[in-house]
Every structure is written in C-alpha cells, then in structure tokens.
Amino acid sequence: MRSETIGGRLKEVRGDMSQAVFAAKLGIDKSLLGKYERNQSVPGGELLAHLNRITGVNINWLLTGSGMMFDGQTKEMMEQLDPELVAIIITGISKVYGEANARISLADMGRLMTRLLGDAMAFGDKDQRPAFVAGELAALRRELLRPITPGEAREVKHSA
Image (cartoon, rainbow, N blue to C red; front, side, top):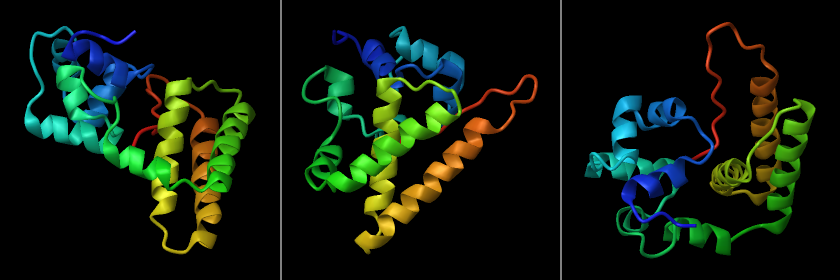
C-alpha cells in the first residue's frame, strides 16, 4: 500500500534500513530524518537531489505520490539490460548472502542489484562487466564475513 504523505513515502524508500544508517547515507542527523518521516518538516532541494542520486527515487513521486517510485534513469537502464549480467548479479548476491548466512530483503536485493548493474554498465567493454561484478561481489563477501567489533553498526551499501 502506497503512503499518502511525503514522510510515509520516504519510509518506503528507506525500506528495511535503519533510520541511523539511512540518515548517515543522506549526510543528515537521525533526528532530522525522523522529523521528515513524521511530516514535521520537508526535505530541501539539495537533500532531495542527493536522495535521487543515491536511491534513484523519483522526486515527483516522493513529493506528490504521482508517477513511478523510481525515475526515468532507472527505467532507461532497465530497458538496456543484459539478461546474462543480471543473472550473474542476482545469483552472485544470493550466493554471497547465503555463504555469510545473512538475510537480505527483497527491496535491498533490488537496490544492490540496481547499483551493481549500473556500475557494471558504465564499462564500455561489455566483456569486462562480469569480472567487475565478481570483484564487487568479493568485496561484499568480505564485508559480510568481517567480524563486527562491539558497538559497531554494520552498513552494507545497497543503494546507488
């Protein structure tokens, strides 16, 4: 069910990510994010542009509820998909999380797949893309398997 408010839609964009982690990604204080999500304040243009860059969220949708949740850049990328590369990415993410005995939400899987695919598509040479993805998945594996020190919050980058 889609939210009727900016704050509710912002929560949808945040997904399963904690407020603290999402606020850190946005470069704002957790309390300010809470105000946005409770509709006590509205994010400014600079923050909205940053939110669009890191998540691909359609700012018009975020502010009004109209249109698609994600912007045309994501749609254009989806139209140019390399099905083999997408399969490599999705299988790789599932394998890495399985090996680490970790869970990933469907929303975070989509965000991570979109980020990896976008980064891989930036390579001009199509033949280099699988090797790039393998390197990114290896880095993800290392991060997931790295021991957490007491008091440390772990953040695995899922969004662009």
